[in-house]
Length: 180
Ligand code: NI
Image (cartoon, rainbow, N blue to C red; front, top):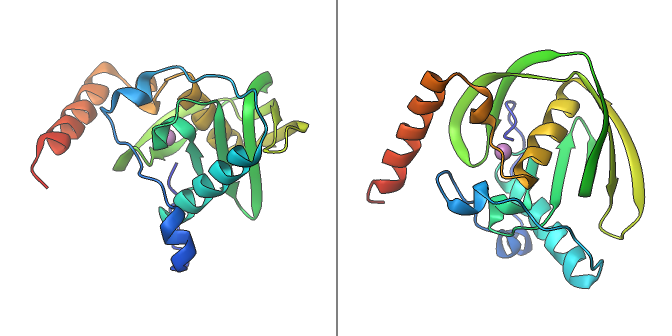
């Protein structure tokens, strides 16, 4: 998910080198359910670091591995000074509802109102394999659910009316077909 407010761009050269390419709709990797992570090794640490660099360069608050072409159950969320790594996440409990504007780094510049639970309890491992229980609310809950959906090949446009969803799909397909 992109963030709305401006933030200082990190133009560090090392960061630029490790940045991954973000896949946009209709890239088929976005629709594919991702595979659980079984090996918590140095490669994983490095990959999560590169995801973080990619998300920060794109002014994002969340990024899921399928969005950089890797069908693995890994997502990261950074918002309001808090940072989360969600590996093999599982939704344990949800409460109440919220409606708010949502976007996605795989749909640049496109935002829509989406209804989601207002509070969630999520179990997930971090990049070292340690198990955590996260309880988050408001925008963080929205970001968690948005990124966790990506791991099941589910996109935020699926919560919209067929009309709105169709308009966004057409726009994205035209963009993908346009010469660069
Ligand atoms: Ni997204």
